[in-house]
Length: 181
Image (cartoon, rainbow, N blue to C red; front, top):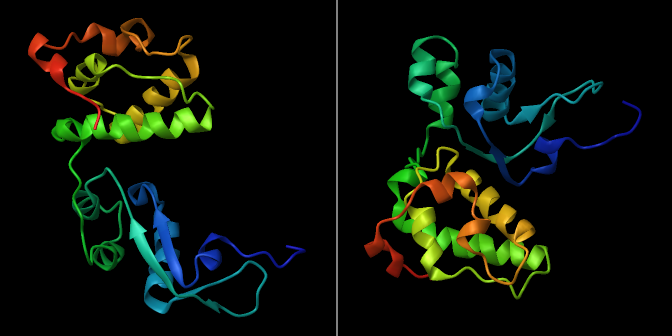
């Protein structure tokens, strides 16, 4: 390394570091993460000494870390250091009441990003979103909404603009009364 550049952990010093999909981390990196949490230090490439850092670690995964500890694919000591305040967030399919609000949030975000401020989603389309199981969770929903904003040709999203998988799942008629928050 020719330049003295800070890495992601060092840049998070005095703040928070979000580790997404911690369950995918290889065992050799888990050792380094354990050292970061225990000793509050990192080893920079080419540096003669460790560097002290103060970061709050927030980790997320869709995997069952307890089962991974049992089968030896996740370090038990790291698991217990990460599980100080565990938060269990149910998948989107178990929170159908959140879907309309999330659609509204993502729709607003992508309309602004794409400069499509005139684009509208009629309330009659929300049931199509609510009955889907969303195996990709919130990220999948966000991607679908972004796709609608980018690809809808007119000023209002129609059933024809929805992806095929949403159109195939016909909502019950009584669900049509849902509205955007």
